[in-house]
Image (cartoon, rainbow, N blue to C red; front, side, top):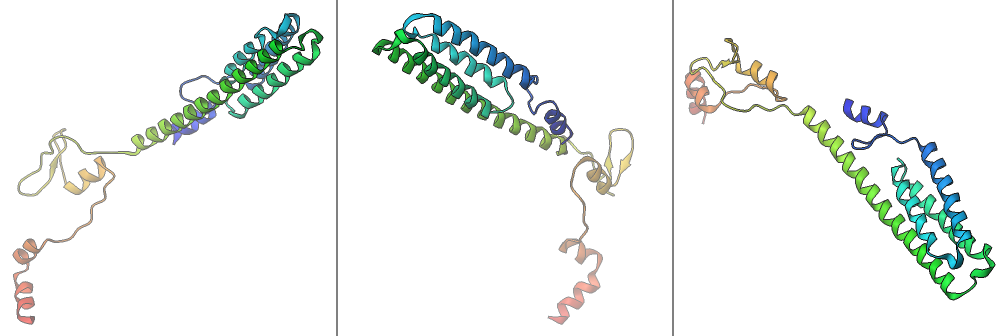
Length: 198
């Protein structure tokens, strides 16, 4: 549980360092403006809109999955806006380039979202597994037990009762009872009384 809290405090991930969301959002906005300007300067919407997919892919660095769709929506608006702002682009080639750009942007957004979701689920499962491993105590190997008193040799020259040894080396708790064979061996009178009562 401590590792989970520590990982959550560090951004909730195991594999990537935390990226400052403000820096990522600001960098994405600056790159979007640069691509938009290039898009306006080139004729016929020559697939510059496809460069917006880079911004969608960069948005995967965010800790928030919703940021991917937010970036995709904003760059889609910029792609359509560039079509209407350039008066020389009103033909089928420019329109087809814009549609291709929008298609590429949204395919990249959906795939990035699914990848990010799977990555976060995998990280959550890894944290759960680490928590589970921390809490598992098992006994392994050969256990030297005295034939007579049933004490266990602890490997450091001492003999401990089986109860104490099991309690120290596992999560098991010992309760006591008596099996039928031992009951008849140690309490023959009680067995005889039971047989007469039947």
